Length: 371
Ligand SMILES: [Mg+2]
Image (cartoon, rainbow, N blue to C red; front, top):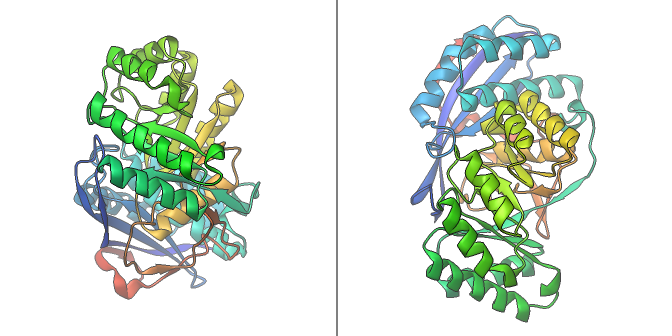
C-alpha cells in the first residue's frame, strides 16, 4: 500500500456556540481535513480543528500551511512503513502538533482500511466497545447551566464538567445550581461534577476557591492555573483536596514526563491534536501508566471524523475518563457513521475510523500527487 496522493481540505462546521475561560466565544469550528490516497484506491482521512489558538497555537491557515509542507513527504511512501514515515514527519518540523496529528490520523485510517480492521484494532485492540463521555457545561447563567446538567443526566451522562473562571461568585453560583439540579434528578447521586478552569486562576486563588467548593465533592479541577505553571499545579495539588488534572499543560510526551516527575498532578487529559497523533499519544499513555497517574482521553469540540479518532484512541487505551462527544454541538457536517447511545460513544466496527466522508462538502486548498 503506497501513498500516491494527499489532499488538504478546509471546512467550516456550524455549531451551537460556546465559550470558556480561554477560548473566547466560538461560533464555528474551522476544520482542516487531510485525505491520503493509496495505489489500491483506498483513502484515509484525518481532521483537526484549525481555530485552536488557545491550546496548540494553531489557526486554520497555519495548520493547512504546515500540513502542506509535510504532505509531499508522504507521497511514494509505503503504509507498511508507518512508524518510519511518522518519525520522518516528526523530525521535519519542530512543534506543530496539530498538522502532525492531521496526517498521522489520516495515515492510520488508510492503513487500517487497507488491512480491513478498525483503527482501535491497529492500535492494539479494543478494551471497550462503548466510551461513557463527559458532558461539558460552558459559560451560561446558573439557571441555564443547571438545565443543561439535568438534560445531560437524562441523556445518560454520569460526569458533568462545569467550566469555571468567571470569578468566584459567578462560578460558585453555577456550581451550586448544578448541584441542586442534580440532587433533584433521579440517580443524581451517581453523577460526578467536575470543573475546568482552562488556566484562569492563579495558584492561591485556585486553592481559595477549591477550599470553598469542597462540599461539592468535585471529581477533579482541570487546569486550574496557566499551562506553563507546573509549580502552580503542584501548589494547588498540595494545598487543596480536589484532584488536579492537567490539560493545556499536558501537551506532548516531554510535558507529561515532567508533570509526572514533578508530582504536579493527580490526573492527565490527553488529546490527539496536542500529542501530534496516535503514535506520540501512545507514548504519553505509557508514561502515565508507568507512573500510575490515571488519564482521560479527550478532544476539542470538532467534527465527527476527529471525534472518531479520539474514540478509537480511547477504546484501545486504559483511560479512566473520556471526553469524546466533541461533535455534539455541530449542526451540519460532511461526515457520517459515529453513534451515541445514552451518553456513550459507540466505537465504530468498520474498517479504519469507520467514518464516511463526503469530499464534495470540503474545499480543497492543496493537492500533492494523484487526486
Ligand atoms: Mg480542559
